[in-house]
Picture 1 (cartoon, helix red, strand yellow):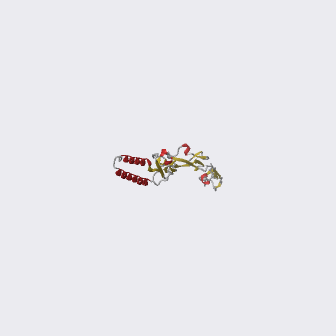
Picture 2 (spheres, one colour; picture 1 turned 90 degrees about the horizontal axis):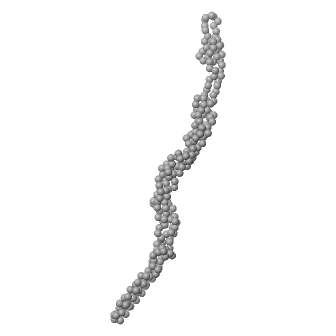
Length: 247
């Protein structure tokens, strides 16, 4: 409280009528005395000083100063706590007094806080919704040869058939180098292609065709030799033609 006192003493010498009963003397309002001598009736006047406007208060920089009659009041601003002369930040995130969404991170700031949606979510931070990273046009880290599966707040990547890797990186698998990865017959040639296994020539099929030819020859044993010779020639020609087609 800052008070300025002003002391004033005024003596008024009023005219005095010397004739008996011709006049009287009376001090004016605000003065006291017998009329012959008068002094100010107020010993002092009080003049209020606005300490807030004069910046002579001792409020904290994060407090608000409010002037009162003859004094002032200090009150910490929102987001701070203390007497007003001292104020410290309130950590709303630690106290869990924030209004951030359950899928958002709370970040404390001086006198306040911010809400930011977690990875895999979008929104203001006060509200957050899942982002489907697998939708066309939405960035994700899956390999072009992997399948993307959306999950809440994230996604998974799995390499497609014929490829190996963690889903984020997928490389072609040569199934022909591992017999457990292809169903080719032991007597067939396996040729690897990108992502798939291909069989060029199945020797087992050729073997079955040769067996059929032999059986056909045996069925003609009792026919005329000319017919047999012609049949054998036809069989050999067919076999040669077949071999050329296979190769």
